[in-house]
Image 1 (tube, rainbow, N blue to C red):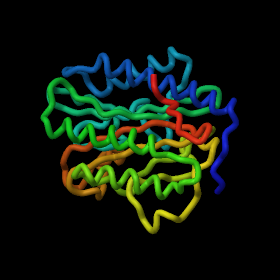
Image 2: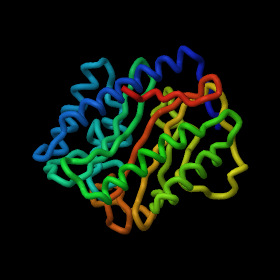
Image 3: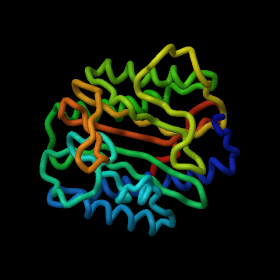
Image 4: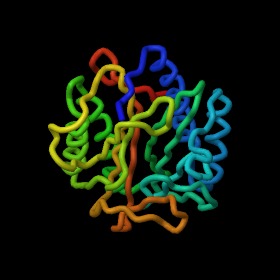
Length: 251
């Protein structure tokens, strides 16, 4: 399948959807504290993004029950909002999708709940820094597999490993589109499609501590590492404009 090249007016629509994601994540980060439940966070996030004019694109997507993926501690991605209560020292991944005028936004952050351990600070920093490092290195003409290698090399240089079997993705008039962008390289970096102006996609480094092999929890959604240790996840949606990557999901 061909990777879509978006026109400037389409990128503007994607940026509007993305901006609402960024604002909602910023709002949640400012109010979340120990004692709140994951379900409360989901309700607040959905109300906030709806108030800004968007729909929660995750709600009902593939059967997902929430509007915000709330991935707590060892859960790396796709955490289901439930009645678990946050406590001091937890780390929480928040992944939000929006739909506005037929176009989608998608981004994620991992945040501390109160004071966290030094190791958890390093873990969160790895996924965040890997994301921005990769975005800074995007160039027209490089292959997506080369971008994957940039992500993997950064993660492993910090002493961590990428989660396997899950990946970043294209986005536009669908929440998930071509191409798939893993955080680990399979095959050779100099293979596959090249990055072009007008492409819009999500990068999302998912970082594990010892093993990148995934396991599903009983809810059939929450993805953890088989090592059972804490994980972290960051994501931005970017558009390639004038031969450089522009972030669409900042508040």
